[in-house]
Image 1 (tube, rainbow, N blue to C red):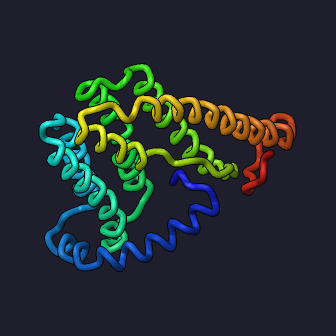
Image 2 (image 1 turned 90 degrees about the vertical axis):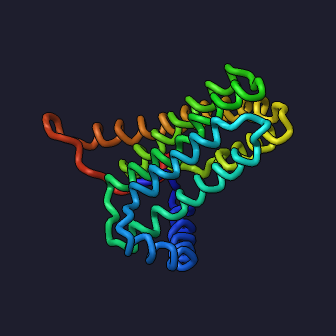
Length: 217
């Protein structure tokens, strides 16, 4: 269960190996203390909420909260592998915690420095919907094209807006809301073709056979 394409998945495996080595001392200590990967994910969400609550006058606390949120996001996977505790349930918790920043921070942007509400809502909704479709497509083994990942750029722009007490995110989020909607349409089209092909291949009255990953134009 993930939201990567084939090329990115290979890169992520290499990156995970490096990350496991970097965080090895921390994961060893956390495992000895009995801390679970889900607790690390939950702590990360807590730091994210803290970051979202900080006004521009406390921008340094917002930045610290975001740094700890990203750190927790980097630690929970290595800790799960260290403890031999990787399974789809844990992956789902990790994915949800990883995407909550795109839900919480747009609302914080509207409240703290007057970002344009419609752009924030469309950005958050289209991003989460698109990631959900990508995960579903990967479970079906439908091959996806490369797509732009806007989350971390948005995080940086949000923190810049917080420190400068000005809106740097509305145009960015408006553009990427339209981009995510376009990618949703492309992904839905590929999933539809996949299911149509399975249905056409199944004998009348029988379930469609499982299929291997296939290229869909």
